[in-house]
Image (cartoon, rainbow, N blue to C red; front, side):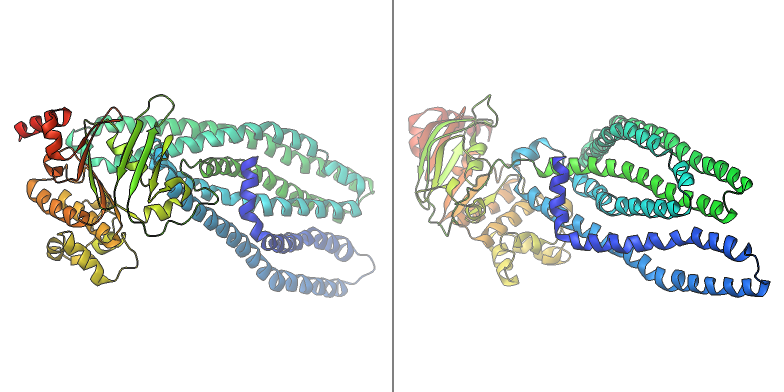
Length: 581
């Protein structure tokens, strides 16, 4: 139940609101408990009263009804309103807090986590599962108590009327308890399985919606339909298992709640005939049976709802407790503006225990230097540069910026000093200006335009339908590869960081775009420490140093001319590419 304990941390700030909601709720449920008493009084003390004329009876009845109408018409509606409103307000406020915390969590999770988890499944937990947990507050922390109090008050009133009849009325309670205990244990695991199956459908759907162009181009519609049906029918199976068990639960528990009033009618009827009981008491008792077993039934429904919401709480906190690969030390310092010298000392790294991706990499980079990493795919170039902004932490050795180990500073302050242009730069579906402002959300319009000009993007942006306010569509679908790249470069110009990282920034472009982007990148890199990962060696011949990495180790290092003279691996790679071109 650790997840429930964690959930209660979110509930704690609202405990007084919950307390008052329960108090108002007791009034709300308490008022209808007067109904059977009114009925008993009318039958025994007015209709059946001896020695009273009809006029006196009617006058008494009118007085009684007048008071009852005031209670039910004037007192009850505001109580009903605030009971509903407060309960929902608290529930929704707690969900708001949890989703806020989860979004913060989503932004801190390691890239490793995202590489193995479908985004649709994360969305399912943050939306669907969190929504389900609201029932825990409204049902578990409010309704359950109200129903228990209602039952106790009703039994108390019944005891004042007739003790033996009350015992008959509640004789089936133990059977009820056993059946609930038996059925609800299994319901929790069935509910979890159902939620997981739904998250899988959602994850699959999310991925396939993004991949519609691929499905189209390979004419895979029928195959994909089968794939989706497989997951969908898995969810159906789990949902039906859950429904079947739920239906059995209701069949047994509702049978018990229906038998109880029958027992009372039989027992009370016998005693009325024998003259030991008034008719009004019998009618009131039958009325109270509904008032006792109705909250009892609600308690059972509540336990179903609670089981479901606790299963969802488990899933929410399983996600919320996902560990971060990269965390700040407690005494981590803010990294102020850096100069840009970087040293890597015996850097090793592996994604898991098995295979080392980098082995003892040593590299000293001076402020303002441009370093290009080259080598075959899978050699470790991209891994090495993702260690600089601490997307992953080194598993051996250290990386220092201006002589300071990057694990001793706050990761966000480190990333504030780094600008990145990647092979596939993700744009958000908002306006072009908003996408450039990712580099500096506080920038004024003029600064955004300046950054776009430096990135050779201003001209094409002006030709768009709404200029800088043009919406780019999800993941930037309305722009060409070269246009996306230039917006990503404009972002970095706007951020104006001392350290730059280009990862395959021009590999997927046509020659004209490449030329414009190359020009923008060189402008950007001229005064900053820059790391470039490139496949096309022609684009990095100007670098201060070229570092050839193979199998996670530095094999050669030097300027383009030096490496060509050495006639080693770099020379061979360059010759092969040159022939191709």
